[in-house]
Amino acid sequence: MREELPILYRDDVLIAVHKPSGLLVHRSFLDRHETRFAVQIVRDQIGCHVHPVHRLDRGTSGILLFALDRNICRNVAVQFESQAVDKAYLAVVRGYPDESGTIDHPLSRQFDDYEYRHADASNAAQPAITRYKRLATVELPYAVDRYPTSRYALLQLFPETGRRHQIRRHLKHIAHPIIGDATYGKGRHNRFFQERFSCGRMLLACTELTLKHPVSGSTLVIKAHLAQDFGDILEKLGWEPPV
Image (tube, rainbow, N blue to C red; front, top):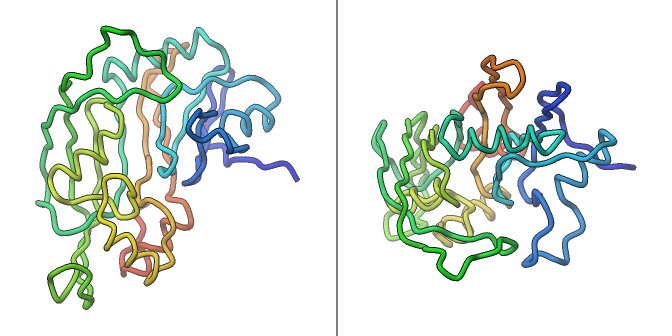
């Protein structure tokens, strides 16, 4: 049976799907053993070539937007690069961040494994800004780290820039890493969620994109509910999944 991804939006030039955690967007040299990619699945699903206009990390679920031709792809990609697209994410993090805040912390450039790198390409720190709002908290009676209890929070995040792994790196910077993040997270808390809640994914999801339609010029808002596995974790923590 052919694999398909839930379609969140489609017209003559764009299609947005809900990418599950663990699925690569496209082929990667470092993951060359993989045989499943969102680009390939959506292409086979709708019967035409598709071009990703932005990226989601493998562990991140949520809205993945494609263009149906290269010119449209370039148009929308420029909107992402020029910070003209509003993005909203949800994440479960360790600890209790402030009720709201702005993380203004420059990040060095990280290159994709498939990306050609010029000899003079700089990895100097670039401006990076992420706003966040705390939606819920919980304190669990388990000593995961050096404290007798463990605290976690649900955050809504609004990255104003688009640096690679920006949200993950910014949350690590303020000592509130995302649960399930094997690269920037805390292994003890990741293992606790795996053992206690059967959580085998990174708890980060793209839930809303707002951009200018490349043809009509009107405002396009695309929203996505949380994936079932993410929503199940929130319920186990006693939180209502945000609508």
